[in-house]
Image (cartoon, rainbow, N blue to C red; front, side):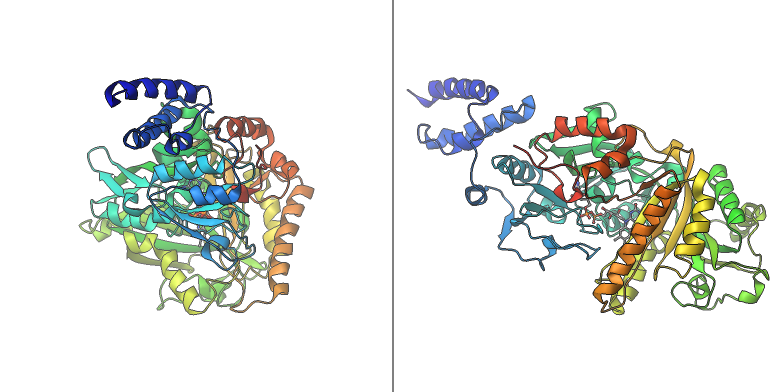
Length: 553
Ligand code: FAD
């Protein structure tokens, strides 16, 4: 039979068989009954049929782990024989180390789809996207699974700015630092940030992405217009508010459970040149929270965050950590006579442009600050370029690397606490359990629930205003095991105290070990989360490090 006649006939037959799960791209690729020239084309056809029809027909015959790894046919590269000291086995938290079967550097989204489809051929192999590995508790790890290095999507790791429509298209493995730099070249910038920018777009969108702009624009997940995602059945799908919207909202804040984000379209705004960066100090928690809430309701400053410091001269956790420039100093004699074990400060920023009249900027700042009740003499401010302001934690990273504490363990605890309970939380946690500080920044600032889309997978406390609480602990350069254990134990004590007191709270960047705890975390959203899982990753292949679901076949 000539190829011209043979090809359409076989193609139709194979498409039919594919639809009934009887044949797969792999089978076609290795079939000796089909001429060489047609084999690859037919394999593509079946692959496309499977993807477009969103079927379960990727059910390949079950294969051993060895043969899956051997047959993994991707454009990118694969590292085998990893140890627990390889980058794919570790994260920023430094508490867990888990050895994967392989570390995969995909050339693009199609490679990722192939990896997932191969993993599905085994009853046990899992797949974890690894952004920059800045999780704390092994969330991007895959014990005996395949870890995908999202940062190395080769030439596809692009950042395309659309000036006319004010958005940027970025690959999931791109760092926010690079998004910032590229967008600023066009005088534009995303609206919502994290404090630290060497995190990947896919990594923060899988959680939420929160900083001092979130009161205005919501978390980063609220600024996404469109996603390209490879689901847990290995299908590449574009989704948005209006197209495949269930997948779109599942993936946002979805802890990597429903698909791997290979591209995100992020809204942009005009970027300012400069910011006036201000810190003002409070001794009373109720004054601090009243002012913080006033500021997030009034939308005066462009950025509002709050911190807790120890009421002492400790260089890391006390007064010296507040001034913004080396020529400024914190004079504690300005504090009221009666103060508690901790103090609070608000960190604020106002955007402006180089050509703005400085007296106009000063007038605005004074107008916004006038209503606040901070200790008047304890006010610190500097002018900074917008880029340097956004890269402030990246700059701090250099110092921490210099003193050897960036690569040591970080038993961090992040949570959202309802406004209803934040005063009690202050009494039992800030002023008691951690009154000596956490050997690193201690953040707390209010956010507005109305700026979060309830269709996303993130769960929040009930109240309209809730507080981010972040205990960003650092250990010594060569920490003893007991130091780390003590920090983890204190985190657990805080969580247990919240439960015992009936506080309305949720862990942010949550970490639980059992389904019972996850169920409690999601509360009335648990059923929706489980339904989304069965729709988009029914075999629980994805993000095993979150320990929410168990791989099934
Ligand atoms: P990883 O740790 O690599 O991955 C996190 C999870 O997302 C894993 O489950 C992984 O499988 C999954 N994942 C990764 N990439 C993808 C993808 N493309 N598609 C689907 N799933 C994926 N958070 C804030 O909100 N605000 C902050 O200000 C902030 N500051 C931080 C500062 C530092 C120094 C650090 C270490 C963390 C900070 N975080 C902050 C937390 C951070 O947002 C999360 O840890 C985030 O997950 C880290 O991104 P990553 O790219 O390293 O992701």
